Length: 308
Image 1: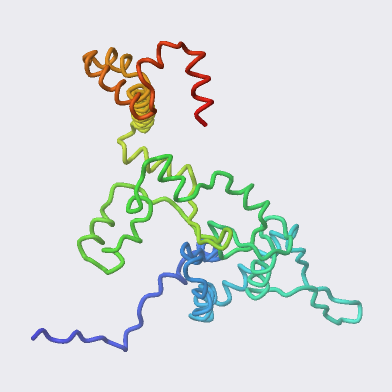
Image 2: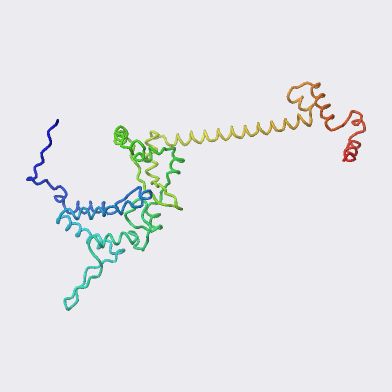
């Protein structure tokens, strides 16, 4: 049995995060702010189970909490055009007036209620940064080339395991070989987000990412794939039209066989004797004799109307 590893609690572990310069720490906070959850439309309660990631960082130690407060103040002030943030004012009597909530609480309250691009109150979240509120108009302006998963599969001929490898059943069940294959895959995974459209969960991609993935899948010959697919589509259409013509010709021949036996024999290479027998059978079915045929078409027409 392998010996248990011994942890020395007397030695203090090296803190790499607090040792970073302030600018790099602020960059990390900027990345954590959107807290994008790409599958949130399928798991609507995912955000209620845990606090915001920046809160988790701030609760680590006093140093990081001070850095988060400094970053929050800087973020609100640098976006004052939409946040309308102002520093606290002090009156002539020395009384301090709190104009607006500052700190991390003020930042999170703003991004949860206001559009981060225009400042308008909205309940719509950005598709590719759903930790931020974003109105529909700004969402279309910031990400204009969105494409659904169905459209990406139809236009670029991609499969689900290429667009969303993390949703593959083997990966979902932690199959070691599939996870290793996904980690070593040469294809760059496209960014995606989920939203609800007409009460249906929809997966959206950036078309530029899907186009780049398709170029990698087809070895840089995506245009050749489109040309081959268009040629195959035209060929299928021609075969379908030819099959429809054959069905129409078959129906015409059936009508000719019943109503014009001699013409049917001529077009199909049959004998006149067989056509004569077909005609005699037809005359017997309608009660017409050879003598009736001698009175001419006018007489036949009169005989036909008199019989009813």
